[in-house]
Amino acid sequence: MVKNQFDINVTLSLFDGISCGQEALKKAGISTRIYLASEIEKFPKQITRKNHPLTVQLGNVTTIVAEDLPHVNLLMGGSPCQGFSFAGKQLNFDDPRSSLFFEFVRLLKECKPDYFLLENVMMKQSYQDVISEHLGVQPVMINSDRFVQQNRKRIYWTNIPIDNIPNRPNWNKQYYQWRRVYFRENKSGVCPTLTANMGTGGHNVPLYSKNLKDKLTPVDCERLQGLPDNYTKNLSNTARYKALGNGWTVDVIAHILQGLNKNEQKRYA
Image 1 (cartoon, rainbow, N blue to C red):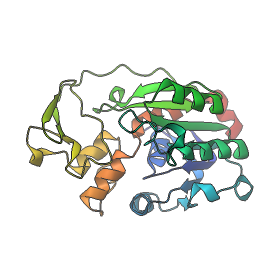
Image 2: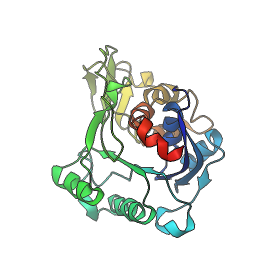
Image 3: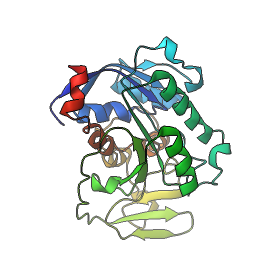
Image 4: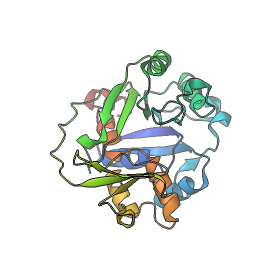
């Protein structure tokens, strides 16, 4: 963890999930005096409440308006991705979940934050171009395997300058994946992408061997997302797996946030 470098007054996190954003801020050495979160799912909110009890929960993103908030210094979020994902139905912005992206755009325009960060999955170039046009920046693709032993390619749009991304370590651990009817060996030395449905026993279940009983534990998954051990404790394993599969890789977000360099810190001095 980086020694505290500077403070941000207000952070607004949309689609906050289990508040991996707060863990990333902490790991980047950035404290935020007020952390506002928009999340509607019961279990992720419980996890956030346990780990970050001072979080101010604002509820549904569609009800949030800038005039009710203090000035937001950092706006961040990972809008629901089911309609964009190559693994999904490719419904584009017509999918009600993916259309929530426009709530991020709305609050970006209303709040006029100093910095913003949006994360999403790999998607068709045409979808990516629409998002880039609305946000006014081009994205950067970062695979979590540069930081942790998990293959997790994600796209990040931000006005924060991103420092050099480290080289991928020579990961060499053996992982497998259950694909409903067969085992697939993951030969890259890293765990396959953690997904929201990996705890259901059906599809994309990460394993240590060709044995369904040898699947990764919730603590294993927490580590692969850069979270402290037992961060999601006190919920069912199914709920923990889902929350972790939907979360951010903390180390990636922390690396991006460290791009708030000394010159930019002056605005908070």
